[in-house]
Amino acid sequence: MRFLYQSRLMTTASTALTSPTNTCPIQPVVGAFLASRSQYAPSRTSTRHSSHSPLGTAAPVRKKLTIATLRAMYQRNEPITVVTAHDFPSAHVAEHAGMEIILVGDSLAMVAMGLEDTSEVTVDDMLLHCKSVARGAKSGFIVGDLPMGSYEISPDQALQTAIRMVKEGRVHAVKLEGGAEMAPQIAKLTQAGILVLAHIGLTPQRQNALGGFRVQGKSTSAALKVLEDALAVQDAGAFGMVIEAVPAGIAEAITKKLRVPTIGIGAGNGCSGQVLVQTDMLGNYPPGRFLPKFVKRYADVWGESLRGLEAYRSDVKDRSFPAPEQTYPIPEEHLVEFKRLIESN
Ligand SMILES: Nc1nc(=O)c2c([nH]1)NC[C@@H]1CN(c3ccc(C(=O)N[C@@H](CCC(=O)O)C(=O)O)cc3)CN21
Ligand SMILES: CC(C)C(=O)C(=O)O
Image 1: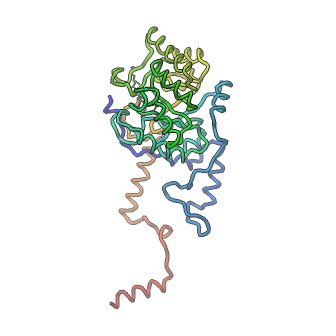
Image 2: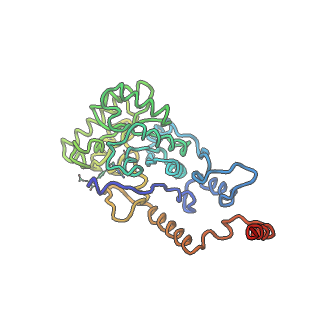
Image 3: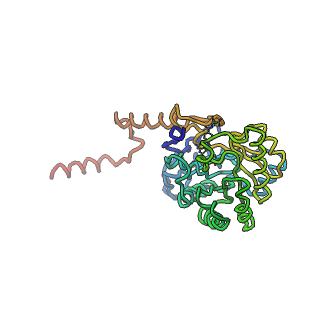
């Protein structure tokens, strides 16, 4: 299953940015901005923007989200929306869609780096992706994963890594996998003023020990262990926790026992919020790829990307691209003179 699960796909989802169906309140601002730039035509009077990030640097689109915002949402029982991002465009579109938390998950190993699993990801890999995401999402609350091997050895190691994630990666909080056994790490980071999102239930970095990506907490005793982990990470100071692949009824009951939010993935709608991997939920993979049961596909980025690329290829092959409107004109007399000069030689 591990082999089926990997993905070597292109990953940007920037097409959604111009979608007229986007109901996000900031959409009119984006629309107006794009319109004022007349289809990205270079302006003589203003700075030219790189084609790699059509909006130049990301302008803030809403009030900056903080831990206080998240706590207030939790208090009023408003679901917290979380999605992963791994680069500038995927962060930018997540922010424009109003996501509260943008998670730079180590699943970027598969969805952005084409690796087989998350175990090869390094802190430097994470930093590169975190920096790009931070530049794309100026108002979101950004959480970065501590990769396998960068925090388990000791609380000091965890703190060293977490400090780099904040200082260099520009994240607002870190996520680390593990329950009661990670309480010392969580406490150390929290005492140093670094916010921690814990991750319990199915912890993919331990896939070998778990015997694969298996649902956790399926028996009474296994569910009690998940609750024990939830209470331990809460008491160690985690501001919240991801609960992955746990039966819905168990995750809901655990959520009710806590005073910090749970962010569910494959854990039912009784959690305080939900998270999905962006490339999964946007359908940025070819048909037939294996997906966990908990993924719902909300878009077909693969289909749209393929359609656009095939149309481009076809236009290049029959020379209908570039058309006159995509080329630079020259006054006819200059062209005639130019040709006369080069032909007389
Ligand atoms: N692209 C991507 N999306 C993810 O959601 C994700 C990653 N990568 N990588 C890290 C983990 C691994 N994840 C997974 C992967 C597979 C299953 C899975 O196949 N679960 C079985 C359940 C098997 C059982 O009953 O125990 C399923 O049928 O959904 C679950 C979580 C979630 N995470
Ligand atoms: C699936 C989410 C929770 C994650 O940890 C990741 O993207 O790595």
